[in-house]
Length: 172
Image (cartoon, rainbow, N blue to C red):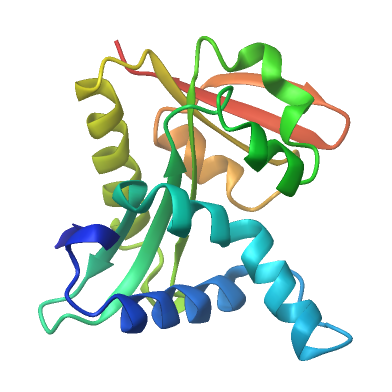
C-alpha cells in the first residue's frame, strides 16, 4: 500500500522509519558527531518533510510496516530555498522546465528488487502527470548502483555533467 505522509496517522513513527531507511541506504556511514549526522539527514530530507508533505510517499506492508519512501518536489525551479540546502542543486537547472519535478527514493535493503521502489516512483510520476507536469527527474552519480533501476523505470533522458547524472522521465 502506498500512502502520503500527510495521510498517515502516526507522523512521528513514519519519520523515524524514513530516517532508519535513509541511513541504511546512504553510502555515508561515518559522522564526527550526532549533530553532524542529524544535519546530514536534515539536508537530504528536512525540506521535503516540512514543505512538501503531500509529496512524501511511503510503501507499507499489510501490517503497516514501512518498507520504503519517496520524497519529491513538484517545482524544482521554484524551490529556491532547497537550492541553498542541497549541494549542487542548480547544476541541472536548465533541465527543470522540461522536468520540473524531482524525487529521491529509498527502500529497506531486505525489500529491494520486489517492485516497491518502482511502485513509489510510478505513483509519484502519475501524481505529477495528473497535475499537468511534463516530466520528473532525479540526479545521481554516473556510476551509482541505482542508474539501471531508474532507466528501467523510464528515466531515459540523460545528461551527464562531471560525476553527476541527470535522468528525466517524460510524463506526457
